[in-house]
Picture 1: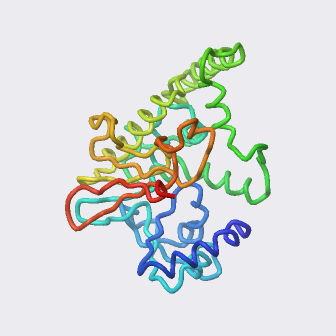
Picture 2 (picture 1 turned 90 degrees about the horizontal axis):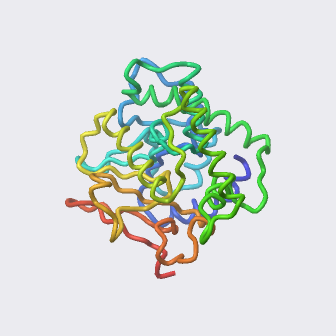
Length: 294
């Protein structure tokens, strides 16, 4: 965290000097920023859809707030109301329901298999925290110890996705990986880690993410006409997308440039960085890309 905060400091200072207010809404990768607050908050008070997060200046979250000066800063979790009919959250709760066998989904399934969850599945933010927070805490601990370093600057999941979805005729290796994935998913489903599907195509990633996060919005009874999230890195709905798949969901994508996901058409990829949602006084939020001109 120390190294990440040091690298982020120039960006945070510039951002804080350019805008009047910053609202921090942590997700999975920065869940560690919430640790102090989660430990001291009154657990009898429901998280709801938006809780105000406080911080100690000595905590990592305090360091982020300090670097954002002179902007006003507030921190909300698990989401924030931007307008009476517009709700925004990182979107990581969707991992609990995703049918694609990503690591986060497997971790959530294993936690629920061991610890259980309410009959009928999660219905409150606390239920999602119980299923997902242990995995985030483990990942954060491993990261602080310098573990799980991967060569090539990419993640294991992206490398596996690329191998399984190679262009042109599939190699013997990719076919073998696909068979292995199908067998592994079948075993996980038998172990009641699922339900999962042995499909990691681009279409499956999009549909699995939308279905999973849509389930969260339904279960948490989010009374918003428009729900903004990110997390899964695939921006949308974009021109050409099937709007019926998206409903009231808007994904602002990723600000990480991952060449293996972007592919051979960076200018047209839905995974390219720079997307944002512009929320006006009324009407649907507008999905724009702030880096296309660059």
